[in-house]
Image (cartoon, rainbow, N blue to C red; front, side, top):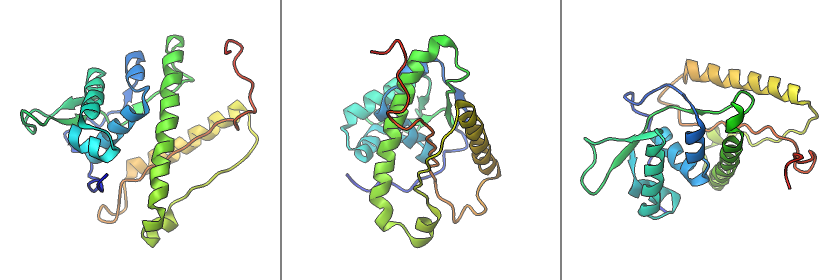
Length: 207
């Protein structure tokens, strides 16, 4: 696998609005690899199946399939003026996907669980790739990064309040933007809040 191109900002022509995922889009995104493809387009701007396949270590045909599925779900679209007959360029339609299980309608519960399951797998893969780069990070970026784990006791209400407060901090930094574009880089802020595995009994309807 070759070194991926340097992250580029999503073009201004791309829609900045976040998208609230419906049931159909949740089903399209219930695949870790497809989430990674969408993430590349959102982080680095338009790309092709060949470029995405090279970065993710999959063949262009598989990348093209996932791109078509994302397009069918209304999450990406083709850039017809940029591609050729043999090479199609794709771009993200939205800045970010939103799905909140707490406010989603009942009919989305199944699709929502599958989507969140795929998200957790995709995030784990991204963290693994980030771990491989730790020895190579410049000192200032290494010092500013964090790989932390906190163990505490909380109720579901406590977790909901904590999540809302953390989201507000992230949104504030997104609104204000970096202090200097010249010194900034694309940064992944992952937040996982979940019961310690093995501590919560499964749902009654689960085998």
